[in-house]
Image (cartoon, rainbow, N blue to C red; front, top):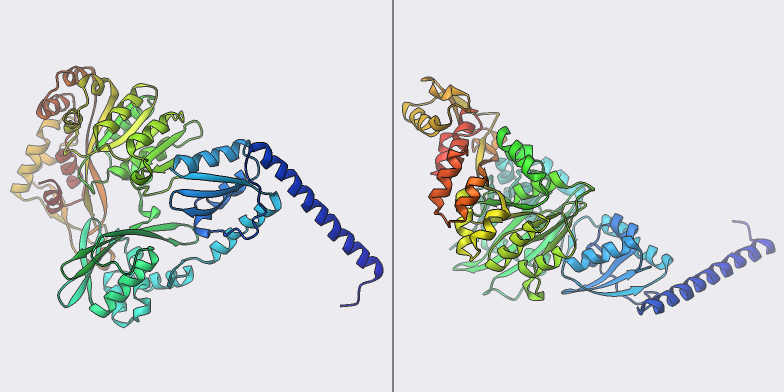
Length: 553
């Protein structure tokens, strides 16, 4: 490179001087702004920036609102911003407060904030890096390409090194769409199982030495204490891929032969995001869509743990998620992140419970409130009052059927005079496995099965196709192939019952009726029961007799 001329040197020095003047002016301007708002000003020199904290906001939101989360310590965040009066900035700050965080705000300059936000590029390059383990996206994709089913995974495990064992297990779980990975230590080894479509499947046995190494790596990943072996621990980590983040929730429990581990994989690609994907009959889906247009009232979904209630609520939220609606959730925990809504997570240690959170949420003037679960009288009362005062409330409650929602609320101490006008519709559901479309076998229904179908569907024969009267009715049974991991089933679908709270049912609720009285009136008004819905799915070739008996017997 030729030496610079005197003129070039002078020009470079001038540019440098002007840049220094601009920096100084910026510092003076934003220092004055900080003083105006009574906030500290910082050039962030020597301030540690925690990339995990930075990730509490996605890059697009951080850049649009000129906000960066610099540091997180338990429930407190240090947050840098430019203008606390800016509407977009206020919205982002309020969303962090709504999640239960205490904020220490500071003001910095635009140049310094931009340099902080450039850290997002570094984060993207570190696709999966926590503690002592790394999986980059290319490697994860290669592992998944080598695994088509559980058989491939078992063969791969036989030749893999200990250092790659956890990576291959995660890749295998993602490829087979497993919801959980279970490690269960036994006398001489550890049992590894995947939960596929709600059923646990044995994968392999692990030597104790192998398992202990995996256990320690999981603890490091999940930020758990390595030296604790006799008490439960909970943690989490994230697998970051190009188009999706997969959160892994980890639970460790001491048992007779060691520590058992359950890793739950929350893959947003497997969640049913639309009403059509839930498996509702057309008549029921049309009724639910109509109820979702209402501006007030409560829609309650019920069923045992693992029945798909939360999935149904997320489908409702996605259906309602449009610019004209403000949607706020309170969940325990947040299982899947939904764009353009405010999601909050309960944290009893910081006093952010369902009840306290609901009180705060109502003051945010939402149109729609999702309450992850109604567990106690206080939460129930606030939620139902919100549904009577201009909000559409979506929530879940543990009961066996749709009619059981009302007696359950009464048991919690809620007066029928509140329940009757507050609830618009109650839904109960279960999940049944779907037959593998590649290998399911057509058979003739046996006389016993045909009689069960007729008995169940006789009361609604005027509403449905009368094929169940045929003596040679075709149904399907499971077979085995590599596409369904030789289980005969692939995926799950909901079976539902629901009733709208009509004038007659509302008057009945005011009398504190029994569950059977409510169910009888709902059926008389046209409710199709879960068992009837299940038999309709059997006739349509979606599931099998064995699966219905397993889930609904």
